[in-house]
Image (cartoon, rainbow over all chains, first blue to last red; front, side, top):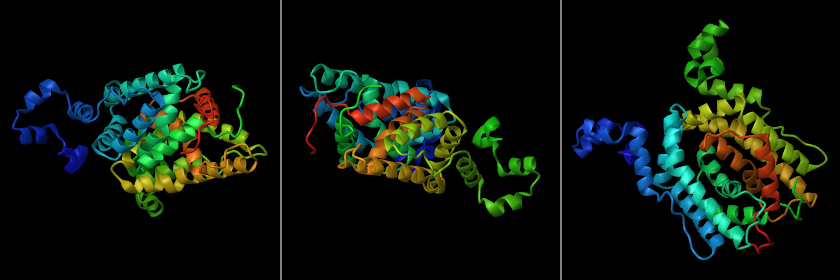
Length: 173
Length: 173
């Protein structure tokens, strides 16, 4: 239903009709359409398990490429719809943050900590800040500019954020 | 009207009543409410003139701090509303991109080119990519996480993106 008609078509009524389940049964499990779609989103992405492996930088790079892929598939379309609704309904924002965004962000921050312990990432950058520097440019392009995002761009962002823009080391301010 | 009741309260009808101007007169200039609100947005921000000055890095840093301030004021609230509507109406996205986003992004890219010519920013990073690395994490926090953004965070993002996360130089891939 969502793939064909988007958020507006995915009413509890339509879901009940298609699944031949009583509306009351659906409402017993999901208080509203947004909660149902957030659960669908969590089933199509794997919320708290980004790539891991012996090389945390490689896992981070892979994670970012997977984010780019997900943004152009069903997860990206679900998040775009839910963000638009979240503007009018703070409860949806909380579902998104608690169900998906924070879990992924924390998992990414843990990978960054591993990379810091391995000496590959500077220890003076807070892991959550580093996580936002990597994923922020891609999510900005997708959900603010509403543009397409490619795996190649994910690689460019990764390399540029790792290397930094400055030609020479700067003192911390 | 927008400050008190948001997008939903800012109907052309309400604007006509408050301004004592005929609806037809308003429609002659703005085809719809979104177009009117985009023009309001362009009047409260200065779309194509971010800070300039003899030191492009300083201007970029100031620009990022001003973005953080604007995100927590009327421009941020207008953009959040318009983005939510743009999800259902591609015309609003085009107004936002052409009226504001692209002009600011291009101006930022020009500052980055100046910094590259001055030898302060690596020449192998495309200016538009560098612009997105700086502003992306802030706009992601504001419009995707729907979180608050501070001037202090803008400074942290600026320094971390300039310096890079890696402890040692990486070869370009």
